[in-house]
Every structure is written in structure tokens, then in C-alpha cells.
Length: 129
Image (cartoon, rainbow, N blue to C red; front, side, top):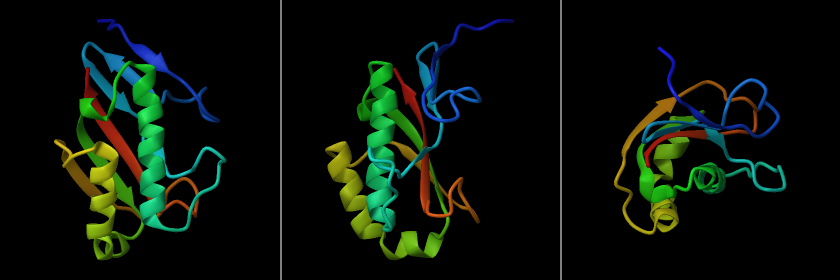
């Protein structure tokens, strides 16, 4: 059975996977890293998290969506202790990005590495549009 998919491909791996895939009213996003518009990756997990959300917002915009459409997040972090030691500051910044307490489910997964050694966090989302 063939399903209709709307794809958004961008970035250095666009030949290998899509940044976003919409099927019906469900949109899945590939994990977004904490690199900024200049391609630089900040040292702090909080600043990387902010950049992850900026990158998420760019993908959502391609589908006419926003953070209001996000229903689920999965955070992959290379140091759970660092994340939890800074959780108050990180989640306060996250609330500012969302403009409220996010109405999403969330999973935090510790991993030994991400695609680049400088990366501390990657965020993957599911949205309803």
C-alpha cells in the first residue's frame, strides 16, 4: 500500500533522509542538532538546545506549522548528568522558546555520542498539523 508523503529535504545529508515527513496530519522531524545559522556549535548544552529549537522551527515552517503543533519530543543527550544539573535553566529557556509550558510528551535518552563530538543534544519531534 502506497501512502502519500510530503517531504522536506535540506542539509548535507539530504540525499539520505528528509528533515521532515508529513503523512496525513502527522509530521515527523529528523533529530535536530544545536548548530547555529553560522554552522558553529556552542559549548553549553543550553545554547545548543536553543539552536535545536531554532532548527526545529525552520523545519516546521516548511509545513506551515509551529512549535504549537509539536506533541512529542525525544531528547538525545551525551551527558545526562550535565542535562539534569542544568535542568532548571534549560527548561526555563525552553518555556521562553515555546512561549508557555510546553504541552508535549517528552523522553530523555542518554547516548554515548551524536553525529559530531561537539554535539551534546539532539531533539527529535512529532507534530500534528
